[in-house]
Image (cartoon, rainbow, N blue to C red):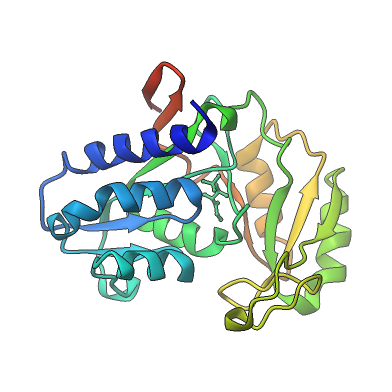
Length: 236
Ligand code: 5RP
C-alpha cells in the first residue's frame, strides 16, 4: 500500500469513528491531505452532523464543495470531536502540527473539542518529537526577535517561503508564506523535544508568537494509525 492509500484507509476509519457519535452535533475538521481523505469519506454522510467548524480556508472550501454546512466557531458552544492529521506524534499523543500552515486555527478548534482524534499513517509515529521542523506562527514584524529567542532552544530557525505563487492568497513564490491569519511561519529544525508541555508553554511566552505547532496541552485523545496491516486505534 502506498502512502496515499494509507491516508485513505485512515480517513475511512475516522469516518466510522465519528459516525458512532449521536447525530445532530457539530464536528471540528482539520487540514491537510489526511484530513482531506476524511472529508471525502464522510461526504456521503454530510447531513449526519448539524454542521462543521473548519480549521483553514482550504478545508472550508473542500467542505463546502461537498455540501457540508460550515459554521462560525463563535456560534458553536462545543464539539464532540476534532479530527485532524499530524506531522509527528509521540507515544503519549503529543504532536507537531502546522506543516500545512494551519496550526493556529487547528489549535483553536482542538481546544473547543471534547476529543482530538488524530489520523495518520505509521510514518508519523516517533519516539521523540523534533525530526520534523517545528512550525511557529508569528506576527511578521517580530521575525528577528522571535528567531533569536527560538535559537536558544538549540534548533536552526528558518522563515517559511511560499512554494507557489497564489493570487488568491496574495502570495508570490519565494516570498514569505502568509497564513490564513496574515501571520508568517518560522520552522525550527533540529530540536529534540523531550518535554513537549514545557516547551509549548515557553514558546507561547515569546512576544510576537501567535501559536507554536506543538500540541501538548491539546494532545490527541485517540489515534487512528494506518499501516499495511490495517488501522490501529490507540486511546491515550
Ligand atoms: C496542517 C497540519 C496537518 O495536519 C499536518 O501537516 C499533516 O498533514 P498531512 O495529512 O498532509 O500529512 O498540521 O497545518
